[in-house]
Image 1 (cartoon, one colour):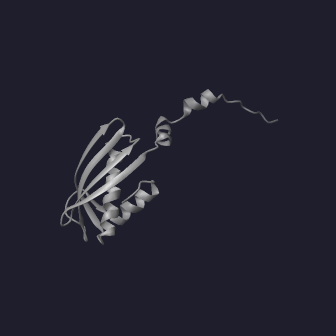
Image 2: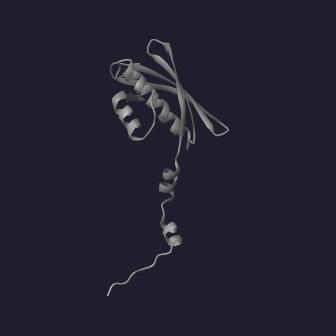
Length: 128
């Protein structure tokens, strides 16, 4: 004899992982990248988006832009120098500065451009 258990939808909702629910509702709108070569290997990226969960989402967006830019210029690496972030009316903006280089630069915040661009593609974050 087989018994069927009836489970209330409310009981299932009580078991849901709130963090997972937050991830499933994350629906960013990427509003473009502005790139400016400041001097030599110093590059500024302006990114804007809505639907960001925190400043970290803008950091990721700017890093994706920097990594793709490095590859476009024939370089394999970049190093993060600074990022300024602000939010107004639900639109987040970041002004980030990176150096790009053909070899791994010195410093703590270095990125391998190919690895980062692949990560961005996997996560649906646009690049330059």
